[in-house]
Amino acid sequence: MSNIIGITMGDPCGVGPEISIRALAGMSPQERDTIRIYGNLPTLEAARAAVGLDVDLAAHVVDLPVEGAPLPWGKLSPVAGDAAFRFIEKAVRDAEAGTIGCIVTAPISKEALNLAGHHYDGHTGMLRSLTGSKAAYMLLASERLKVIHVSTHVSLQEAIRRSTTERVLATIRAGDAHLRRIGYAAPKIAVAGINPHCGENGLFGTEDDDQIAPAVRAARAEGIDAHGPISADTVFHRAYSGVFDLVVAQYHDQGHIPVKLVAFDTAINVSVELPIDRTSVDHGTAFDIAGKGIANHGNMISAIAYARKLVSGAARRG
Image (cartoon, rainbow, N blue to C red; front, side, top):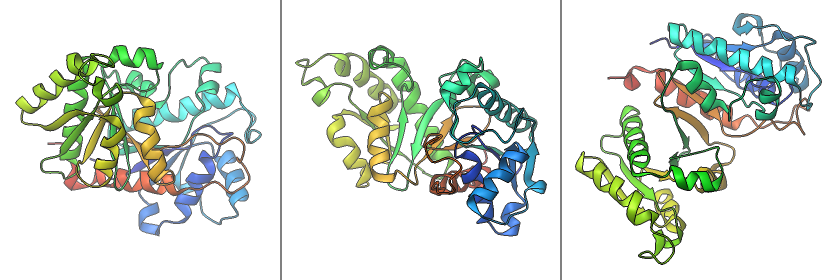
């Protein structure tokens, strides 16, 4: 596996270019040698000026054209949406070819993406489509809390429909395999319930008893150390306290809220079960502060560090 990490700079009008520059500037020369930024050089030069850092870009940028670049900061633009897609597409093809070992994605605007005619619910759906994958799971990782999601960018009503026994079991398996890959010998996995108090024996709904509990039993039968369903109002605290290594969340906000509460500036997003490796910052384009040189790049540093873990020899796929 290549040790080269490809950073896609995200929406050219957002903070992606700035946080990419800040991360690159903070690296040692040896670390920089393993970085390629998939983006647009004029935009990155403008971002460098905004953050006031002196770092050589030319050797580290896979330069793709953007009409009118640099575009105005903080403006929703279909041109920017199309550019963000092309940066990712190029990085995916290079990852498939083995030129780079992992993709680290800066934030994109889903609205700009769709205005440009690229109809995806976000990075994960786009990467699944570009790689022809049947499934991909969103895992949020922080130092003390890791969460994988049964569903993400769908309505709450649709999320409940998607919490089938088969899908929950597949999510447990994906989370277990990923944690083993990054060094956990026997991951302890908690599965969050979907209803208050896991339905209170059917008083508040039967989904936990009918759909989620059978998935946990099946996972345990396969040798996975899975527990649940456990009421969502306590399971994240227990995981944060070290009782569990990973929580399976049933829907987007159930998993995102606790992670962002405890690790807003350091949590990262990992796509699990794609044929390529990808990590990402866990925040948006922040159009309101783009171009001001004040964006926090802590998430980007964490995402790059996790990517380095994935491309290291210890994390090679077996």
